[in-house]
Image (cartoon, rainbow, N blue to C red; front, side):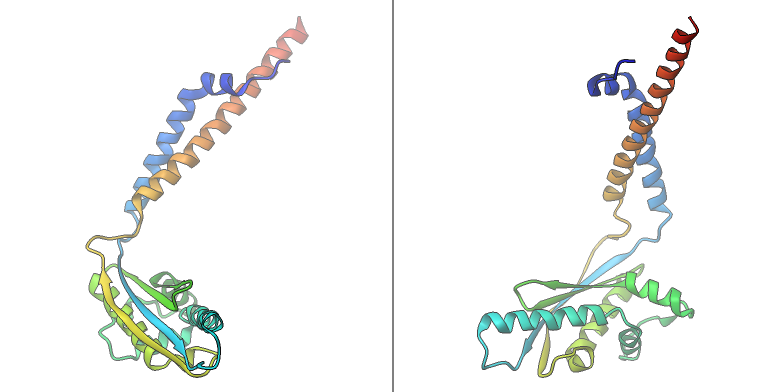
Length: 213
């Protein structure tokens, strides 16, 4: 039984591969529209410590460790409660009363990112309402800048908001272009698998016919 070369494999099955890839793209786009649209509000904070006796490199690495700690603690229930009680106009009923579901939604709502080598931590807040996204970003920045030592294992930590919240004009979630590309790629792979299965079946059928003769 001869082996099918890759070029022949694609040549014989390109229509199937293309069709399944396009179907994957269409399904991904349709599913994207079933997800709730979310805006993003972004703010940045500068982290520093009272470490006058150490060199700049050591101080920078120390600030990054503090930022990493804060980025982890931002997703905790303690930080969530602090944000909700910070006095900002945040609709708490957006978050479920069930603890597990609330944690999952909170993790999707707020995204901290440590900007390496800068001493900055970026806070992204996502919400169907752009105003609510901004309120959450402002509240998170307020808690980190006024209660830094409560959400850090280090002492002498100073956190200062250096950028006011910047809101997106259009929803950023779901990311339809990325979802469409993912659907196209996965569909193409599924098409390749389907063509491979069909070719293998044809080979076995021909082999059985030759054996009968």
